[in-house]
Length: 220
Image (cartoon, rainbow, N blue to C red):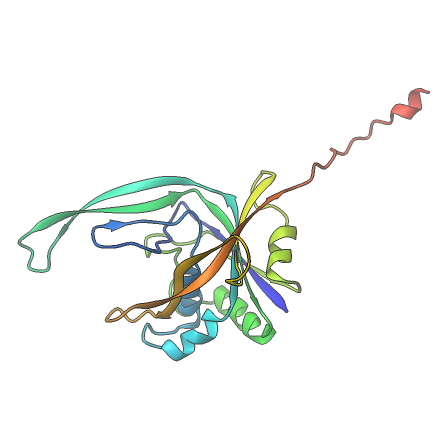
């Protein structure tokens, strides 16, 4: 078992799970469908390659919130296809958020392949929307441990001692919530999403005493 870690950080991110019509919302943290889409773009998968996409949806996914970010609502005026009518749209973004995401698998070869393509992607990568390119480094490499252990033991990316974790979970585990967040097809003619169960955890880093050269016993 191994876990591939990703650093998801940018001036703007957008991770919509229930966006409809003129209002395009974002979740508070990256969605599994959004990260799977990023991996699919790195591999060079086309939107209608559903069979190849199925290899990625089986990966276990989790995220550690390093910095929550601020909500930004962007106001747009768009034209209809016939260019005769205008309408207002609202797009929600996260500003200056930072996340540590992980994908776990027993298939280490697949994770190694994903690590390579993230360094040399076939298509441009973005964090939820095309207007949100990631800052580097994006890929932090493989860790030979479980997803939860990797997220809980990886050194902090931002200052802070309290982390919120969101992990894929068994539906029977207590405290889980069902999310429609598993991509079945990205085909724009008929996008399809399945369901997954996730649970939220909180972790506090233990206090670590600051290093000092002062030795109080010298005065005795």
